[in-house]
Length: 369
Ligand SMILES: *Cc1c(COP(=O)(O)O)cnc(C)c1O
Image (cartoon, rainbow, N blue to C red):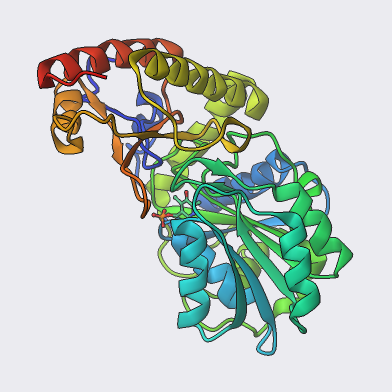
């Protein structure tokens, strides 16, 4: 761990970024200037390439990841459209909240937070509910670390002629996948997850012919995805309204560092190794994981509290933070859990040190497991 880092964020984002990504922000850019707009156009091209290339286009949107999710649901579903939403975690639930706020007709396939989406259940709902035009699902449910079967659901969407929106916020860049692989018409992610940039904008990779049909459908001005895209296309990288210039510059550095690492495959391998070491080490200490291994992503891992009543997350959090590791509380309703992220500028040696610190922290707390 760098000595100038006060602590490592083992969280689902914002996450620990490299020093060079942070340094890339030490310059001011004019949001209208060609220098900057060329950078934006390049970022858009590189995102499409990372998603496998083909007849896709990318649009960037100011705000945190949720703004891009809301921009997508609010812009690409026609006024008489109907959504099928999968809800098996907080982010799936957020899709439902967005549809409710925007008054978009929708049906929800609800599942327990530890259960992956079941493609045949989705197909049954499609058969039973007339008029579904769009399906939206979260890929990696960051709530728990559970991975939904994105490609299987993509196949069903194709079969039924539904447009498929995938919230791949916490998986894109950290799990190898192309738009063709997952069958998505829209894939949403943000700057501060697996690409390892700093927070400030999200992005949507869109199937161009599908996206081109959506003019005038947006339910919001500032979150009008189509208008934003048109401005970027015709203005050579221009954003509508002030753009997060420093964040974009840091993102370019982050993309360079992703290439240097060997691309998404190599990054995915590092995250998987972080995850493997973490789970093995934590199990050796006596912790149990929440999600069954076959549905567990290598993005973030949920652990159950130990039975010893001396264990409180608050005390554990403080003991770990004193040792320069910031963990994440759990977010689910029916079990006491905490989460440890495997993503960001975090390496197997950091995980080894983390495990040593977990041992020390438990001993300091007098917890036996
Ligand atoms: C991080 C994340 C989001 C967006 O969260 P913000 O706090 O708005 O950046 C959405 N979906 C998933 C699955 C996420 O992991």
